[in-house]
Structures are given as C-alpha cells and as structure tokens.
Length: 345
Image 1 (cartoon, rainbow, N blue to C red):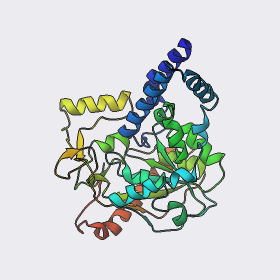
Image 2: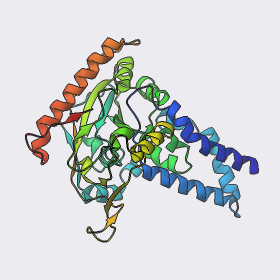
Image 3: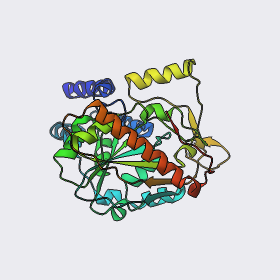
Image 4: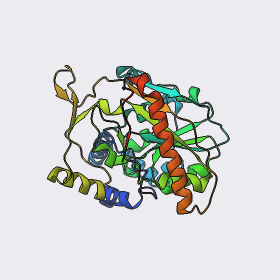
C-alpha cells in the first residue's frame, strides 16, 4: 500500500511539470485554466489518500487499480453523460447571471470544428455553462454536434474530478487528444479551445474587451492538419463577473504571475466577486452580470497534412478578421457602444 501511495504522490508532483510539455502543440490554444478545478481536485485527492488510512482502504485500492487501466480514456474523448450535462443545478447556474448561447449559422454534421473561445475571463464561466452542460441547449441549437471543452491535462490526473470532467464532455487540451477527436472519432466533433489561456486571464477586468490572439497560431495549424473548420466565438460579459488586481508590466506581481504561467500552466490572479450573502461585500461568488456567447460563422479549412507557415498565417488572419467582424456586428446588442473596439494582442 505504501508503494501505491508513493506512486500516486509522484503523479501529483509530476502533473504540473508535465503540463508545459504537453500543452497542445501551439503558441496559442492554452487550456481553460480554472483554479476552482484545481482546488476540487486537491480536495478529492486528500479524501482518497485519507481513505487509505480507514477501514475502507480496499475501496481506494480498487479505484486506483481501475484508474491505472482507465488512464488514457480522457485522451479519447472521455465518457460523456447526458444525465450529468442535464442536471437541474446547471439551469440555476445559467439563470444566476444569466448566461445565453446565440447561434448565428448552422453547423454541418459532416464536418469537424475547432471553436476559438474569447475572452478567457477569470474562470471561463460562459464556456463551461454553454459547452459542458445542456443548460443553454447547445445540443438542440447545434443538432448532431458533440462539443468538447478543452482544459488543462493536469486536471485529469486528479481522482474523482477526472470522472466528473469527462462526464461533462471536457477533454485535455493536448495534441494527442485533439488529433484523436478530429481523426478517429468520426465527424460532428467541436473542440472548444480558450485560445488566450492564462496570459489572457491576466488582463481580464470589467469594461475591457481584449483578446490574446495575434501570436496564437497553433490551433490554426491543428485545424489545417485535420481539415477542421474554424469557428470564432465571443462571450460578451465574460470579463464582467469578477474584479481583478491588475499588475503592471515589469512589476513584481506580474513577474510572479508569468513564472507560474511558464512552469505550472496557469497564472494566479488576485480577484474577487461578491459575498455569499450580500452583494455589497467581497467574496468568491461571481457578480450576476449577463454573459452572452455568440457562435460565429465557420471558416472552411482545407486538409493539409503539412501546412506551410504561409498557409497558417493566411487562415490565422482570416480568423482574426472574422472574430473582429463578429464582435462589431453584435456589440451594440449586448450593451456596448458603437465606438467600442476589440483589442487584439
């Protein structure tokens, strides 16, 4: 049993070091890094480790034995559960803000897709609600399309948490997983990648519409290699639900954040929402601000097994232009002035 515990402890220590090396073969396409997932994962790990010291230790041994055989399941899309995705709690979660999903074009079930989700915000709540639950009826709005929300691969090394993530249709954002879903899982797959990732979350603040995209081209290369259409997606209000302390470039705080981002895969943010019992106090409950996720028109992408840099740059430029066009077309509908400009960094 000591060997089992030691082995699992090694997995936990290595999970974050491993993340940088497996973080999806791109300059862009970082995972949806949600600090809440990390906390739940640690809690689940502690509870299971404690179980080893109780009369129920055999259950923990059986679970870890099964876990060894099931280790690679997340890389193949996991085990989606419509029951979990339709839990009533997600509808209450949706209505709290509220969160809305807007469809602008049909998606063909004979194609595969990569959705670029913008902006990251602090926790990517719009991405979670719209694509890993059925609260906004994504399966009815896009019939025949299976959404896979991509998040940090390290989350799937956390016991119990990994089971929940897979049941919601959440997958690791690494090349092995994306290659499998786009080449060996049939058609009608839609992988949602929060392209700006941890770097974008550092600039998240109310009233600011900015995306980290100009040098993020890895997701475009993946789309070209598999002939997956690119779909720009923008969430109006994602940056409004939390307030964050923004550290200036060159400050010690920004230096610490960038070191965490580089070596661990996410950047710690100092942020706050409202209190649990009062909107006039600080806490971790997000502010109830509307989040509207608009799914744009797909960009048809050819299949090129060895895309050149010129090919990548061409479709990346097309994607950026489509995202800005989508933002400009819908901004006034969701409370922004006509003069508002999307900042692309």
